[in-house]
Image 1 (cartoon, rainbow, N blue to C red):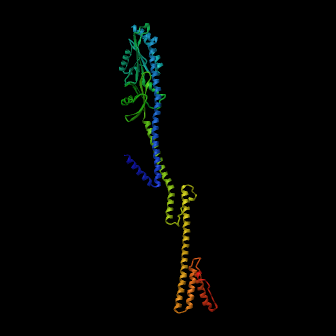
Image 2: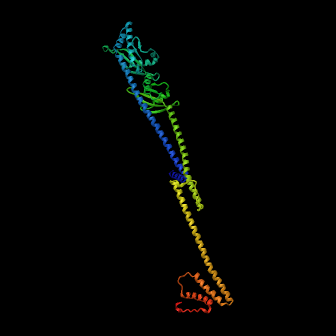
Image 3: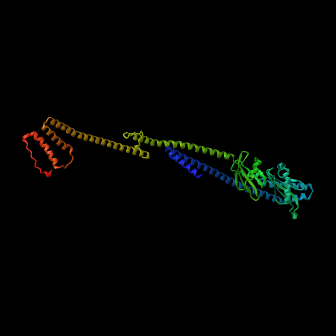
Amino acid sequence: MKKRAETLKAKLLTVFKNLSLRWKIFFIVLLNVVSLLLFSLIGFTILSKTYNELLYRSIAGNLSFSANTISANLKDVERLSSIILSTPSIQTSLSAIHESDDAVVRSNANRSINTALSSYYETFRQNGVSYIVLYNDAFSNTTNWAAYERTDSAFIHHALENAAAGDGAVSWTTGGGSTSGLFLGRNIRKIEALDFSTIGRLLIYVDTDRLINTINRSFQTFDTGYYILADGPDTIYSSAGLSKDLVTQTLQLEDDTYQTLRVDNHTYFAVSSKIPYYDWRYISLIPFDSIIHSIGRSAKIILGIMVLGILIALALTQWLIYSILRHFNALIVKMDGFSKNELTLEQSAYDYSVRNDEIGRLHQRFDRMATRIRTLVDTNYKNELLRKEAQIKALESQINPHFLYNTLESINWRAKASKNAEISMMAESLGTLLRSTLSNRESLVELDYELELVRAYITIQKIRFEDRLDFVSLVADDLH
């Protein structure tokens, strides 16, 4: 496998080396652009993850504040129950109803209980209290009969059972997701004389939907949001519009973390927390469709801009490469033309003498080199012509003496044939002198050779002057 990879790498390098300069530059730029695109996509992914982290921190902070506020409100409701239990007027009225069958006593007790409950209801309704109901042996008192009548009777009965089982302690009863409320139930015992007998039962109905929406409305980051309140696997409250499957999947989310859920073709961003003191799970669901749509649209816009930028960059790269390589191509054409005919140097339409970059220097140096070569060619050509001319003249100078020698020799033979000794002697003597003058290149000769030339010269002169010239040569034989 490794050898195959090395072979493939070697082939790719060979292909790259054999590419033209234009395509080499283009692929280098393309590699940089693709690298930039990949790094941009990685950066966008990191940015999306960072955005989710920031979104989680923002929602988690709001959810934590909301959970603490809900816990504080429920503690206030518990405190309200303690206040009602210990209120003297309520204790007195419930004791009177428990101990007397007098209609007037019970009527007065009824008014006293209604007055006290109405006062407490107005004070604590901002804590999500929907109504307060107080049961005694004869009748029940409530602050909102209409809301009380709308409440499921089975839910009320279950809350009374839990209150009785609590034997005076605070008991919270949930509707199991079928209702958006909570019941706080307590038995009311007689405090007077430490009797502690049960004289009534108290139920305080907390509208969790109103409580949660009121708390989250002031600092909610998004326009829409859903909330789930659960006690372990049991749902205490879920916002209207949440499907059972979505609630079930959301409850599988671990505490103090976040995830995105895809249910019924909708995406939700879920963040889980805890309600302090009560240890209930408190989950916030933010519809993520609009966010994903915005992110997707932004991603498409960014991707489109990047692709457009890449296309523009590649087009600009091609134009820049052409603008550079056309000067190299012009140099190649100039070199090809000069190599075919060294006496011709093609002139470019572009003036490279004013450029100081590498291209300008290449053209300038080639032009200077071509000029020098042309100068050398011209010089060598002229020198060669002169040399040839000298050779021709030398040949001519060699041809003329031979012509003279041959002519004199012909005269000599003609004279001998005619038995004219004087003409024969003059022709031979003149030939000797000419041969010595034209053919002998040595500066030093023997005396015998020099005397022979003198005799040839004297022979010609004696024939010319006849008896008027006398010549005597006195040279020892050992000097020849």
